[in-house]
Length: 218
Length: 218
DNA sequence: GACGTAAGCTTACGACGTACACAAACCGGG
DNA sequence: CCCGGTTTGTGTACGTCGTAAGCTTACGTC
Image (tube, rainbow over all chains, first blue to last red):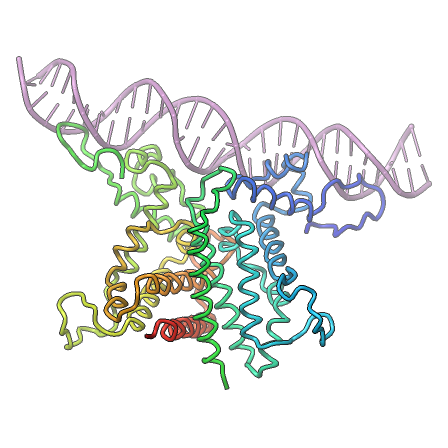
């Protein structure tokens, strides 16, 4: 992320750190101790390195947070779909524009939410730092293709996708929302609360997707 | 908010501060300089008072932020409706359960969004700190009544209202989202961008509300 | 070995939240 | 008028944060 994108041209001390390793350590600290504990010193400590060493690979703390955001969002969207386990019907090549867009949109929402709930303490960060727009568009290109294949204009597709994304993020915020302290390891998941949020999520998602289906039909 | 809820029983130095004044100053600092500048020292300075003096009225910074959140949310929901300017058709008393719930839900969404956009730098705060649940339910009681009057069960009504609330907040986050630095006075509103977000907001809201209308019908 | 270069370290500064002890400003009763 | 009591605001101090500047370390190349 910083100056030399790995030239190793001539000489120089061999690097113990990489930008990716720094971001990964930041995610670990974030998951384990929360956003308040995501400090340069703590990330450095997890890597066995002084805080200032991180600045060779990341310009400042905010850039590190942005790196975490993009890392997690990529992970959310690129996640292999746990449904259709090795289905035999692979008519398309590697990635395809198969199936109606509403289904793909729902799958995106579910996958996004799954990743958010896997990293609950990262949700406020995702909410606060916008995902890099080029990264987002690249990752969602396949989804956009589904809409295009159905003749939906690009603007309408973007509106639907963004609306669903915004709903998923807002919903996750509500589910994991706590006063941002709470350094404890992790509040145990209450199954009743989980069921409540799952039900709510499904209802709101269904309402929005079906509403867009009518709105974009024709 | 602190120990003596204004007893003034006997003696004591007269208070120049109140919890409300502290919260109001915090909102001013937040609007003017952003969340990073919302420090105890700066709020104190705006009140002509030392930072430590605030602790007589607020237990800590997080409680102050919670106060700001509840203040802004109350303002959003209690806002007088700018539509129907002194309309002659006031069949009900002061506040009523008139009109279908979908319309009331849409009005809530619009009013909530208007307040959020009036305080753009507060949006990340609203997203991060959940509104006190009792406060929220009290403020939204009228809206819940609209659903009850139409025979919608309470759980479905809560789901719809929360989903819309979450959508509005998420949408506002996307609209005002910037790396949380940016201490400048305020980024000037680009009219084209504003129109884009307005259109997006309307489309997503309509999709969700109409989706719930079908889902909750009967 | 000496040199150039890149990576990690040490030190230091200003700002933050806030614990703690204290000063100031009011009351009623002598 | 002063006096103890009560409450409010203040001064000082500690530990932690992000990070600027300069130093040391560990390489590849002569």
